Length: 452
Ligand code: UDX
Image (cartoon, rainbow, N blue to C red; front, side):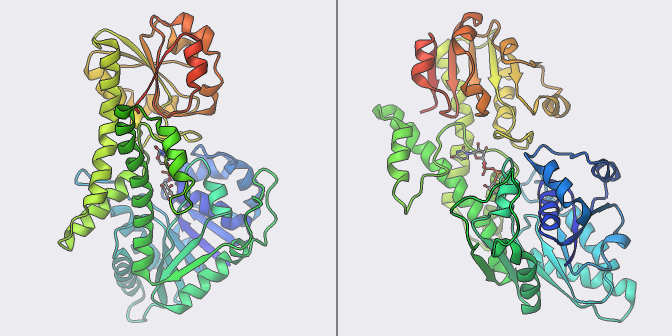
């Protein structure tokens, strides 16, 4: 099928590459020409494992362009995957979305087209996009009526494992109020639903994957599914962090508690890793949007609001723990291990590290930071914070009064902790992710701390 994808960020690019890989003819469009030039030259503007390999395999089916006139007229399915960044009020900024919808409307050629919202958009956006498309189509083509349908196809991919999540998803959700649109999307995803594509060697098909469940529903339900899924995952994390606080007081081990409850298949063991809490572009923004949408209908969402509060509190608890341990923070040197909001990405959006670093700097701490991938981005985006960027962990630990593990990159688990201890002024480690081996670190002479 002929597909156009508007936006080459994490979601758009991953979707485009995966659809190209399974055999569709895909035009990836971005109005940022430098991104398009880079992609044409084989450079990937984001860090995502295996993306460049899959892009090379899919390349015969991919085109990169900045021109709507090139991408839209022939496309049977158009995905909108532009950014919807949060505004200070918490509501998403829909400027890029409306711009994309207008440009698509102007360039649709009159044959039936499905326009799919892939960006996380407020509930009800489908209808709004529909009206923008219709208006701009009519402006361009006069009275001739447009033949299109708007659909929602929320993505559930996690950064760092985006390709795996796209090729082997737990489910695919499509929502539209017109059956023609649902049929077209079903055909588009058929190779993934039936798992008929040849798995790449570097992304082997997991044993448990056979057919993928399809949830084919109406527009509003698909839009709400996305928010409800992210809110539920976010509150699962906040729940374990709330229990973690009590576990600490009563002398229980939160990892054991998480294991003990997670083995109940009704609960499930994933997303019960206690610690600093969630960051990233989705959970914060989506929970805020959910609360805001409910407010528009005169409803409150106390569970979701509590999950948000608990998540904020976890960042404060990092500072409280350090204060309790070191007694005085002013003038201390503290090392931060991991800046990205989670491992295997260079994404710093709503990364807990940024807030924690700022809180420490505000208290007069000299902060040294390290990240295997996100260090350059941190310097570019947060260079104004006066911290020392270190290329190696050895450089970070030198003269430190404490280390905080903020992002659980694998390489931090296997460090030569004994040798590093000797370089620190005071071997204190606050393991914000329950990622390190408590016994090993204690044996190596560390004061090993966790948030729970
Ligand atoms: C999330 C959703 O998982 C995905 O389905 C959605 O479409 C986009 O948002 P992502 O933000 O990429 O994906 O990362 P995810 O793996 O969900 O982690 C989010 C945050 O929660 C990270 O900061 C992570 O460190 C934290 N987390 C996750 C925990 O603190 N504890 C856990 O047990 C799991």
